[in-house]
Structure formats: structure tokens, C-alpha cells
Image (cartoon, rainbow, N blue to C red; front, side, top):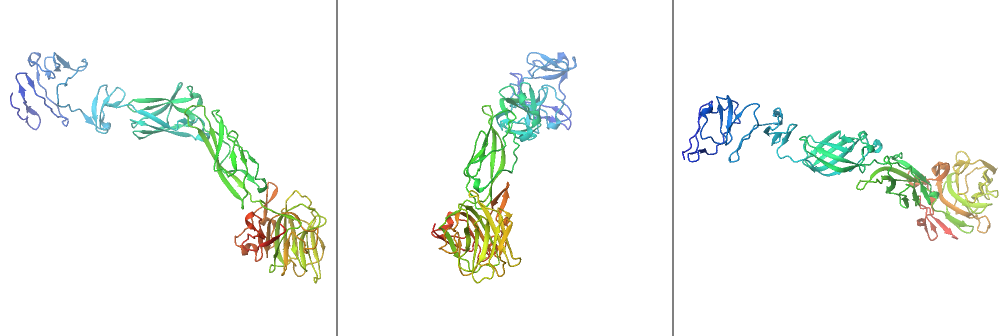
Length: 568
């Protein structure tokens, strides 16, 4: 075998080349020539047909001057290379070196012809033209694993104008498209974002979705297609299932619950409808303790505990579309709603005609005060409510004609003063709210309010001159006549939520409010500072169990003006 020599070149062309040659086999060993960076041309051997080399070797190429065509030897015959000639093959299967193909960016692709092959430096990957698009060599079709959600709505009321479906899988390429396929056509995604090779987000316009599209088990097939044309179709992957439509709006107050009506509640909610005709069921989260919701109707029932101040409970009610498709995710519509719980008379103290409360009221303002109390009578006639025991005495009372009044009198006083309301109060099933605003310091004025309204009054005689006799270093009673020996005039009935404000003449608006035409109690606590809100000797009795211990009924105003209970 002859020894190889180096290339003989000048600056423009290869002048000559020899390589290892084996005369016994008449073959030249493998050789690689890299001319990919050159822009001129290769000059191949040329000659007439009679000058063809003999013996010829597979893969030889030359220019035949007789035929005026390039030709190659395929191992058995010489084939010409020219436009219009039949296809031919090049067999390099016995070679161990390489062919260097044209290369360039995606933007440098030539006008495609079927069978073209090149190396794309942008990807980077070998690619060929399949007659429609450039396809990566060995490219696999996209893969489908799952889709979320697996439902899509045909109604925009709750779903909105667009809906996103997130598809998990593999081999997703830039430029991929997503479509929903049904027996009558295709719905294309309005936009597709290839998040990465394993996730695609497809956005669909709701108006293009229709429950009438779906004829096979109420589902769409999902087709993902890469730019190469390779695709995958997942059958029955998306269900058409719209959210329930609810006219109920967020922040709706379903019910304002009064303290006296907090048991046996039945609170209906506006029902929802399902655009697809599915059955709607209901549920709730964070319902107030004691309440439950009926799944079939949405009616909220149960009992509520009383509150010490007006309280708003916010919770969520949920309308669920049960769906009729196996495997479909349940669609739901949620609203945040409220129930307002009003403070009320959850506790009261029963007086039986022999029981009463007492304490010394010395030191309070004898010219200005407010007394607010809720009373339910069980006995009619002349009854004492609250007053001072010894002369000079004063009493808040029911008169013999069942009117609310005040008598301020006693020995040593020039004038005895009495006022009574013109209202007759003899309903033993009702709670009455009484407010007495006593202000003789400036206007010689006493006002009675019953259930929030100023009552007309009649004077039974006398003129105030030097202040009320409610004060002084004497005991004051609630529920008993001034003298222990006086019988038949002690109070019988219930009392609740008693306020005494020392030094201020207030209106009922400080202690109650109208709701749905009903006068109800509210918490009085304008500043939270006892001395400011109640005055020096003011008090507040709620009669909650925690405020009663033995014979002590505690004041909750912060002034610690506690009372002593007798006969209970």
C-alpha cells in the first residue's frame, strides 16, 4: 500500500491529493473533505464516456463531457445527475466518516422542497422539509397527561368572557395550537402559551363554547398540535359544565336577627339556577354556631346565641352544580353573605312581689339623671318600680290607672310633685321600654319615653323647686315600696337591662333603635369610659348569670355600684 501524502494546495484551489490506496482491492480508504465554509465550487474530474475509469468504484462522481451531465457510479452502472432525472440514492453505508450538511439559523431556511435536509443552528437540531413544514429529525408528537380544570362553561355569567385550561404532558413546542373537537366541528383556543415543554395554557372565549356542540357524553376531545403538524388528541377530556347562576350578590344581609327571635330560625336564600339544567345543591362555610343549611333548598335553620353587642357574622354560601358526568369536577358559585345579630334582652330578673334590690344612692345629682329599663308586667294596678325609702321620698311607678308616672314628695317639702303618662299600659305579654329624662336644673323638665316615643304627660300637681328627693343618704329600692310594711304595691314581673345615668338627661336613642318597625334595645357605651358615660353614681344591671353571685347583683358599667338582692 502506498503512503499517504499531504494535500497540495495554493490559495484558490486544491491542486492534487493522494491517499492510502490498496491496489489489491482497487479502493481508496475513507476520506473526509470539509468544504462547508467555502463559497466557490468543487471542480470534479471530467471526460468522455469512453474515458470513464475502469474499474469503477461505488460513489464515484464525474462530469461526462459526452453527455454534458454529472454522473455517479452506483456499483453497477453510471447514472446521470440532472434536472428531471429519476431519483437516485447515495450509499455511504460502508463508510465510517461523515457528511457535513448545510447549516444555518431558522431565519436562513431556504424555500422548502420535499426531502430537503439541513442543520438548524437555532434549535439546534437536524431538520427536514416534509412538504408542509420543517420538522425536526426524530421529533415525537406531543403527549397528553391531564387537563385542569376538566370542565368549561358555556355561560359567561359566572365564568367570565374567557376561560383558561392548563394542559400537562410533554413535547410541547413553540407555536403549538390547542382546540376542542366535537362531532360537529372544532373550537380553537383564542391564545396558547407554551409555558414549558410539559405545560400549555390555552385560553378559550366563552362565547365560542356551546352545550349544543357536545354530542358524545357531553364532552370535548382536546387536540394539541405542534407547528410541525405532529399532534395528540385526548378523547372526552373536557366536560361542558357551567357554574350555577346566582342573583344573590356578595355582602347581602340575609337576616337581621333580634334577640327575642333568635331561636327556631328559618332563613331562605335566593336559589341559583344551572345553565345546563343540572341539579343545584347548597353548602356553607363558617356558618354561625347553631345554624345549618339544607343542601336541597339552601334554607338556613337553627338557633343563635345572644350577643352582648350588635354582631355581624360573615360566611360563605355555595351553590354547587352536581353535574351528570362521571369524572367531571363539580362547578360551584360562592357568595359572601351576612347575618346581623342584634343585642337584646337575653336575661331578665323576675320579681314576685316579695323580692327586691337595694343600695344607697347618696351622692348622685338630684337635678339631672336618666333612668332606662325594660319591663314586662305580670300584675296590674298601683305598683312601685324604683324609689327612695325614707322621707322625703320619690318613686317611679305604675299608677292605679296603669299609667307610668313619678311622684316626688315627703315631709318637710313645700310641694309634692306628680306626673304620669297618658298612655295606658296593661299588656302583660309585652315588654315595655321606659326612659325617664329628669332635668329640673335648667328647664324644670321631666320627660317620659315609652318604646322610643315621647309620651304625653299630665301633671297631678306640684312644682319642682329644689331638686329630686331620690338622693340623700338613704337606701333606694328596685321592685319594692318605700316601706317594708306596705303590702300589695311591690312590683311583680320582669325587669331587664337597667341603666341609670347620673348627671345627663338622655333620649331613648342612647338605649334603643327601631328595626323593621320594632323598637329594640341596643348597647349604651358611647366612649367606653365609665365616669364619662355613666357619671359618678351611674350603673348598668344586665342580670346575666355571671353578674349574680349570692345576694350581690353586679353593676357592669365600671363604676362598681353593685346592688343587694333580697327575697329571690
